Length: 197
Ligand code: GDP
Ligand code: MG
Image (cartoon, rainbow, N blue to C red; front, side, top):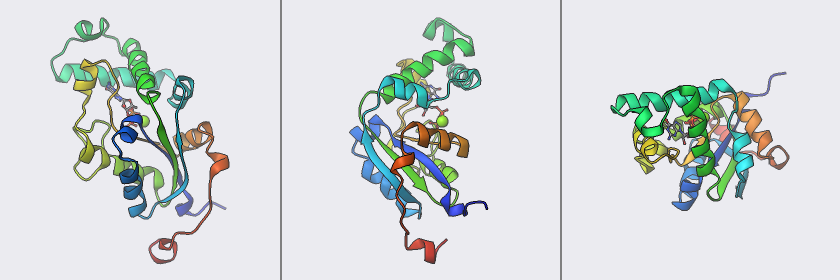
């Protein structure tokens, strides 16, 4: 039997900038406010290796990061050769992935597993666009940051965007497992389960 839709799970991290800006409570508040349920929660200082394994390693994902970076350079009239000494997506992608590993292992994060109806899409909606400068007001990234790819690429660092949230159910499954959260899940009932969903 298929699990009930309210059992869908996603993995969320308050990134090091979110922790250092004191936004852990605010992120949790916004998630819980929608009726989504926190079923695992832990502060943790990840190693570079753990971050490296968290983000996909396949060529398609890494090249996608390179393409995103190239399109930002193009949009703002910057020459990738001048900025990075290279102009191929498959060569730029690994550099951006490296910036991401530096950023994500720069301090403690807060790991969470969130359950509820459309948990994956709901938390992505709460998070907002990857670039805080493009994220709608009312989203976590839109309300609490103004960072952008243009600014981050210029500084040769990852975009500081406060939280990570799984993009698909498969990504969530991999991440919950990778971060050792499978054995830390708790079971309880939110009152909304009788009233709202
Ligand atoms: P997310 O799922 O919204 O977090 O975005 P992605 O999975 O596409 O990218 C992972 C992370 O890489 C983002 O959260 C950013 O921190 C960083 N990032 C993504 N795109 C860029 C980019 O074009 N430039 C830089 N510097 N960092 C990026
Ligand atoms: Mg992602």
